[in-house]
Image (cartoon, rainbow over all chains, first blue to last red; front, side, top):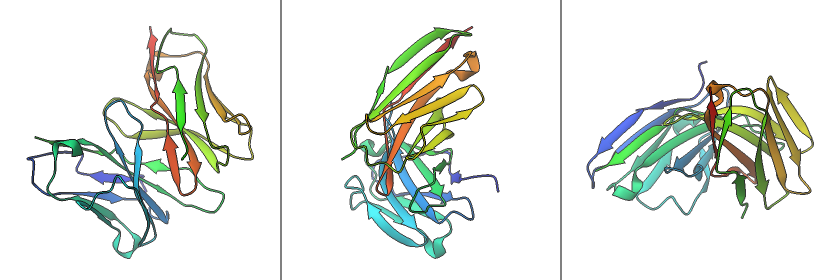
Length: 115
Length: 110
């Protein structure tokens, strides 16, 4: 297991197009998180899954954003009708979480540029 | 809502110096606190994780402390090296998510 994998690493798209990112977590991790990071800022929470259930969504996740985690394995994050403000690094993390809490393992991120 | 602040925003030190990065959080009801390193344009690499019941964690030249009651954590880097140059982020876990600071950008000058 080589850690959390994200694809693609970079994506340049025209405004108004749809994009989809993929995250493959560490196989035994039951929780998967999506974060967004803009330049000079810390990552901001978007949503998380426990197994296949999406349990929490941030207000940052507008109706143009949708995330899925079919069968509790990999996850996809889709952005419809992209806007320039969507340009950011999209980070995926996974954890084997208990009530006490484990740390996160992050992927390398997908950098989205909307032109 | 948890607010995490990191001071200083940027730090430049000569090689070999010991240094301390500071992190403060407003809600002391945290499960744990994690320090990350981020190189330009890259993802986050975990450095140290401190559970709420712990006071400190050590890994090599790194030592992180946690004082929940005062809402503070520090990351101590001993004998800094040019390869330590990066942005260091702290994240406090409250509820089901981590809340991040904006990071400290560290430059170690050879």
